[in-house]
Each structure stands twice: as C-alpha cells, then as structure tokens.
Length: 421
Image (tube, rainbow, N blue to C red; front, side, top):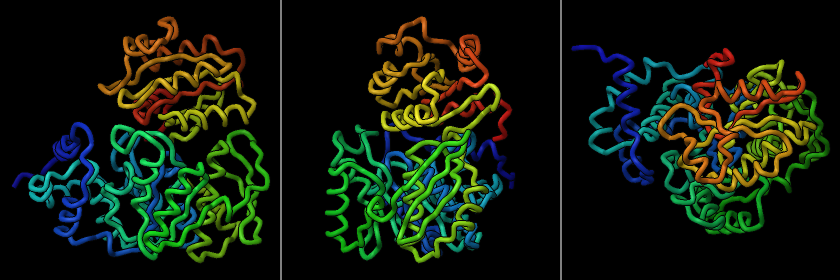
C-alpha cells in the first residue's frame, strides 16, 4: 500500500471547500457518531461572536494552561497553514496526525459530503481526545446555531461582540445575526455575553430564558477601572467580585480590554480563583498572531486581521488611543466581504491610506476598487509595492504602517518581515 503524502492529503481536504456555505448539522452529527463522538471526552467552553471570539478563546486557553489545565484550543481561520487551528498548549497538531485521520475517515467524508471546515473541526475534537486534555476552548467558525462546532455540550458558552457580517448567510439585520449566535446556548449551561448593543442583549437574554440557561452580561460582572497603553502593551485594571486584577495585556485596543473581561468573567463563573500572577503568566505565554501584531519594531509595522466594519472601527480606535492618528493604513480586502462601509470609514482617517491586493483569487483587485470609488492613484499592485510606497511617505521612524483587511494577507506579509509561521 502506498503511503499518502502530505501534499495529496492537504490538497484533498482543501478541495472539500464548497462554493457558498453549507451550514447543516445533521451530517456533522452523523460523522461525529461514526468516528466515536470525540467531543464528549472532555469539558468544553464554546465561544461565538462576530469580532473578538478568537482573541477571547486564545486568552482563555492560555490562562487555563497557567492554572495547570492541559487545554486544547480550536480557532479559525488559519493564517498560513490549517494546523494553526488546532493546538494543545503551544503545540500545533502535526501533519502526520492530520494525514492519518483523514485517510482513516475518507470514506465517511466522501459519503456524507463533509466540508473542509467540518473535517478540521473533527480533527480538532479527535486530537484533543487523543491528547487527553483537561479542557477544550472551541471557537465557532460561522454563526453558531448550525456551525459544525455546535455538536458540543459545553460547561459554558461565551458570545463576544455581535455586529453585521456574513449577512448573506446569517441574516440582514442585527437581531437575526444575534439569533444565529444564540444557537450555541445550551439548557442548564451558563451563557456569558460580552459588551453589546441592547438589541443583541435582548435576543440573547430571551434565548437563555427559553432554554433555562444562566445569563451573565459581562459588563455587569466586570468593571474596567483603568487602562493605559505602553508601547505594544496595555495595562488594564479590572474589578470583579470585589477583586482587583491589574495585568499587562499583550494585545492592543479597547476591544481587547473587553475581550479580557469576557475571560475574567468565564474564569469566575467556572469556579477558578482569580489569581493575578497566574493570569499574567498565561497572558505572557500567549501567542496570537494577526491582532495588531508587530511585524517590525523600527520602523513600526503592524498587521491586523480586521475584515468587517466593526473590526476596522476598533483598529482605528486603537491607533487613535495610542496617539497614532498619522499611521499609514495599507488596506487589502477579501471579495467575499461588503467593503463599502470599510471604505467609508477609511475616508475619515486623518493619515495616509494605500490600497492593494493580496495574492489569491478572493482578493479585491484594482478594477473592483476603482468601481467602489477608490482613487486609482492610491492603489498599488502588491503588498510589497504598497509597503515601499508607505516607506517613501513615512515622515519619521516612529510613524506606524498598518496592514489590514483579511487573514489572507499573512501568507505574503510574514515572509516579507521574516516572521516564522
């Protein structure tokens, strides 16, 4: 028997990506049943939201590790390789594990029509079982109600910030989208909701009442007393249940402060003693790329995966809070996103804005940008050309150049700045 090579197996699973989105849980449940329901082997914290769910998941998993819990973390999408989506502690799932399991499951994958994301979800759940994790933190891919991860029966669920995104799939108004996120709420399991508009709060609270789930609105539980930015870190002083937690957060922006409060509230709800030193140890050891990530210190170059209006708003707010309103923004968008609201936001930015495209068929190219009203003189043909232009107009060695627009930028950006993937 010929041993399958990694390229053929990875080509196979990437080939399972389907046009549009194939949200439907019955085939996923059948697939999980056939492979032994690995997700029932350990406690799970399940996280949904439009923005902030990945950062919340990464912080929570890192801190659980500092508390001595062997913790699995499942997130999406990846930046460079799919292995990034599945990790235990700092260790990514190996190619060998992926290859062996995909080959073992291939007949079921083909018979049931399992998609790329669903295969990765199953791989994560199986890997956590084989690694005998104490706990797993699992982020939804899209929505919640019909997301492949929603086969779990979690200890607790967290919903982070909810806003307009994927309207063609999840609904064209905020209550509909919130309703899809609310699909992760389970009977008799607490639901923690991060800071959100009243309309989202109403939908989540109603759903929690309907299924008899304990509802916790995080801003009512955790108060941010003070926050200051120092370089590429921020000092955050929070108050929860009479405890003061004063930590250095290795992620920038007010939105990351809010994500951190989600983590504190979850730890408290799950019965962990809120020890400042342990929490800081977890955060210090956290790796979370693409969130105002420093690609270079001098001159400073940042990369953020913001890809919707709320994400861009938070990025621009974070730069403003740092006193960096002169930052040069380099934008490269995904064609599957509604970019007009982001273009409108960029018109208000006082600094320079340069437009370009990342490599790949899903990028918004020059002709499309012009169609949306972007000045052709502001468009560069590649990320490299855009960076060279930004360097030429940079007025000082402390002025930030910030790339944003998609997870897909990483594949080109990381090699440019010699960032290990």
